[in-house]
Length: 193
Image (cartoon, rainbow, N blue to C red; front, side, top):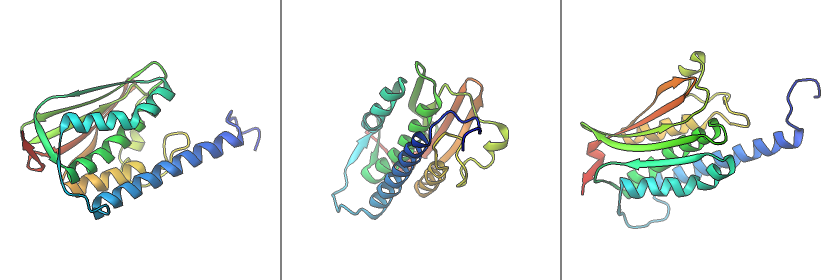
């Protein structure tokens, strides 16, 4: 394989592939568990603050490993059912993990949420290099990942989860200063505290 210009060793390539595979397997298993209510637990409600704290806790190790600061900001009293919160959490964790991977060491990833009219808007902002125009139109289809060691199915699964929630998931901004992904839930999925 030598001579292809890739500085990664074969062992690092295998580790990247294994990490990506485990991450995608976990995402699929968690999605099936939430959709099937496999645990049979009673339903409960989570505030957007609790949801964002849960996402922050889940990605903390990845942020520390990449030396990326994670900033979380929530506005409002909206509460989500456990099912909607768990599904939204799966999408947000995937988006934040992608943002952490895209952001160089010393950079910042932000996760914010606010009610805007009839939508509850979650924004995940990174400080990466942005996405090339030719990749944006197929971003939510299973394909080759733009990320080293990525599987290319995380955003596709996230889009399916968002659709199941009646939510909208899109790339809101992309520039050389970074990307912003937007997850919009209808306020009907929420309850005001």
